[in-house]
Length: 472
Image (cartoon, rainbow, N blue to C red; front, side, top):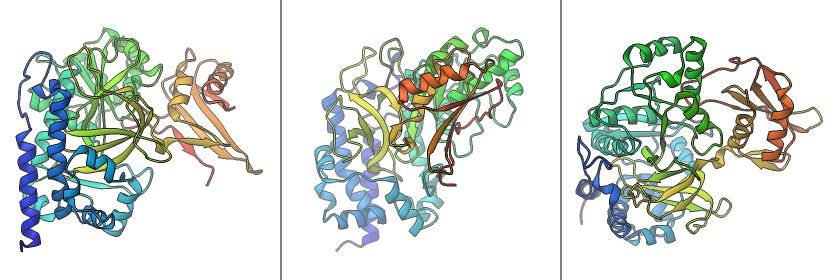
């Protein structure tokens, strides 16, 4: 009988071999249109690679993750029961954030849901990332240098699709820290051989000076910070659209799928948007990304990299898989990591999936309408449910509103839940327009507080806009 530790190492080696077999590690694009030939794989070839990866990763996780071993055993399943994508979807229930939170609470500080132990971390550890913890206990994920090369290539594919080419230079306007989006873009830019102008640790006026002095073609930041630094430039008498910036690589928050936000960014900067979507648990590298056609009119969408991830939508209540074209919550299986592959994790963003080929030449699934309205963010006010992005769309629809806004939920002494939307505007009379726009989109009455422009706090990370004080 093979010793358990030997089985763990054998399955790890087999899994890494499969990853390397299907990798395309490069430092230059395969053509002007595509970074990698993987972008143009047929759907049959994509599925064949997915099936091979599922069959290999299941035994690897069973032998190298106590979390997965316990789950297989609890379900009465053997790793060999998952030999294809069809097996995975039919037999393996989705994994929720709560399961991971329970695991890390019982096994601090790392939990047992990843396949990176102390030995792997000491031998080839690269970087540790953590979920925000805004919806519970933060979940920690350790990645190795073996993982890093796959991150770089996935992100390079996304940035190349977004239009970045030799001759471009990038200015990241982030403080990095645990920001997976910023680190992922940074390493991809290095893999692509593109120069970077460091912009961390500076105030906004100093960053404007960098733009004016060094003429970067690309900014890397959140949508809310792109709006903010544009307003700083305007205060200094500088037109953002007249600057050197031609591309906004944005991530961390929804943008293209939010009516009004994408257009506001494009109009302010006179630039195109390259959207960069992921989540810490299963797609810390780029999961969704833009192409030239994705924002050319009509319904915006994102491409998904199916050779390294399996994407599904499920019903929000039952978690039953939905058919293509039905709007539901996203579920992702990550097939691009030595240390943190995950099987059917409930990411929880709402979207619709479409497998029709894109005019850009990519055959992978598209997320129609992009990713908007994460289930965790759902607001329930007096039985009426809506998402913060609906409030954002209402605010953006009123001319003259500032870039920032706040959603404040409170409870009166009599137990009535109330909603107040705080907006920036020069005209106090704009309150009635905002209230009407909110009611038309969310079917709920709200109070509106109008404050002076540039009053609300700004952040270069994810903007905090929802303040729920009902249980305080």
